[in-house]
Length: 502
Image (cartoon, rainbow, N blue to C red; front, side, top):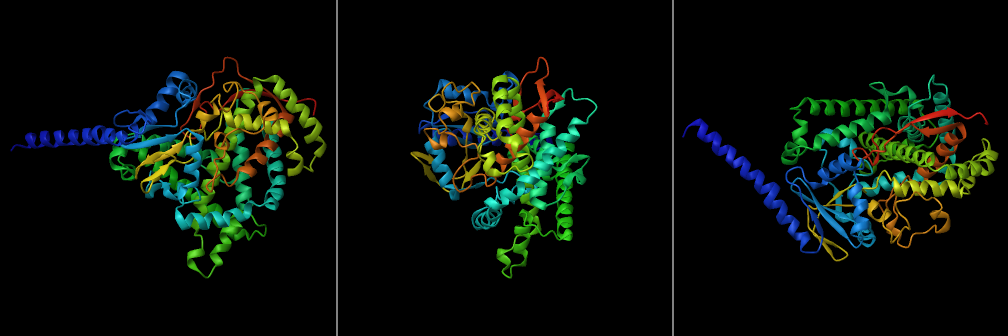
């Protein structure tokens, strides 16, 4: 047999394997769900999970457009199944199913999307498994008590004021990228809360750590959209066969090195205040090795909190300002509340008084409904065994997650759901189904920093509105992408000006 004949056979074998794995095997797995009445959406090779979002973005400027429309056109859907390569992805829509998923979290674990080259993203609280997760959650939860939140209000306030002062001193305030400015504040705030350090001196390739991390995550996500990755998994990227893969690996290494430098400096500084790093470092004094948390896990949790506390809060604030720029009455009412409640506090701002700002709270809750950065979440997890969510049988190795945005735009739970209406949270502050509105997820694996995030968002919003007038640039078209969280693809450019009536 000649070499060309052997090559032809190998080629036919390869094509046959691709057809088997990405067509026949995938459709067979789909059958396990379609026979239960689950709506199926299949696309060969790369899969409908990614293709749907890319198509939505190109056609409608909104990566999650179809899920909003499903809430209108198919209001009784409980779940749908898409594919990520050959793997089924069950997307939960019904609040009752989401509730079961939240409370049966022990039957699921974060999929090994990243491999060894990017363990920094999944070694922290979000990706930890079993007893390791329980240990991390117990230790980290100790720092999120009321006194810890109370002590960090001045940190948030002073950081916000300093960054807004720097912004106001720029030579031009036209076409300001609001998302970038919000990330500067949230990144610095998370760093100080975590390490009690001024992190403005730490940059990665000239970018703040939070902004660099967001860009790196986007590049990692892009690396996953390939047949090579779907066939070979993380090893395909780790081999560094392509320049883009080598670039991603180098970016992650730079991020990890910078975070390790920050941790080393934090240790050497011998800070007395009980920041989050303090609680984690204290475990290293434990005589029982199993109860200690390593430097690698501390760094992974720092990255976790940057991801959770920098990008999501920055997205939320950017979209809040976008909504207010189009709703002058809502903005006017917020300014009135600031003048009545927030301004008299001066520098004596505290949690109790922030909680009295009902209109500010309503605005943020409405933003988290319409423009939630985690609208397609929580972190998708893989079933470790066959199980049931309600009447839905989930097979082992199926990826499962929730599309909150479906219920957020469902008329059963929200009147006039496509309209931005903060007043709905004043008139009817509670949703009929608890799991129909879970902006920070729920159950044992809910967002541990959600109260801190809301305090941070309130202070940042009030300080920005106090300091600046703002408007969208002319002919602005909102484009919502989902590559690094659901948020503005263009970083929300605005024209701003310093208020004269301060």
